[in-house]
Image (cartoon, rainbow, N blue to C red; front, top):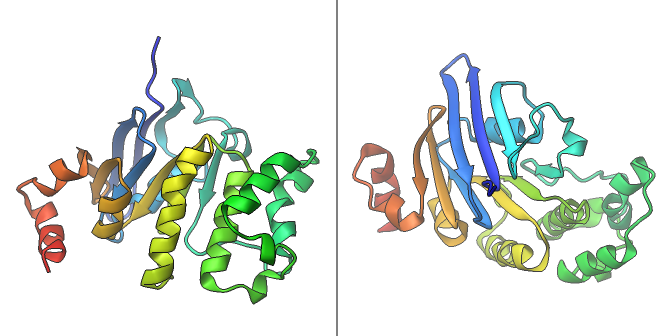
Length: 234
């Protein structure tokens, strides 16, 4: 029996609105959750990662993982900012999950990740001495080195300037080709959604308003899309 890659059904009562999320990802490499601030995008990611309790389910390849602890889900959640440990070096950050779980470090994978993210020359540097772009590359490298099936990214470019943003966008496009992982990315930026999204899920006040391809989304004729149309035509 064939299963969707990811199926999500989340229901939770919040103070401002009810989170009522229902969507699936079939085989898309990068799915973008788009919507305004406070729409429930980040809470959706946290729920999938196992960091928020809700009614419903999360399924990966048909398996209900909702009751599994986060570290057994083969999912990595990267919140806003880079979440690196500033008292450690780049290398120590990369291998931290292996050392905590007392697993043998996968040296071939480590080499691939270090080369892919072009961090050979900073591997021994302290995290405090990294630029914003370097820190974000290291954070992504650490996430991929954990070998996830699904990588959850919450506004990964929000603190970067335009040049660094599009440099990292190229990394994301290539991640899904180089490593066996898919990406679910949250943003409020329509340009990021247009460039990256194989599938767009638009959320407004805790509800999925649209799920499909970018071209179909931008051709929707309703108030939710009109602001994005205006922005993209400037």
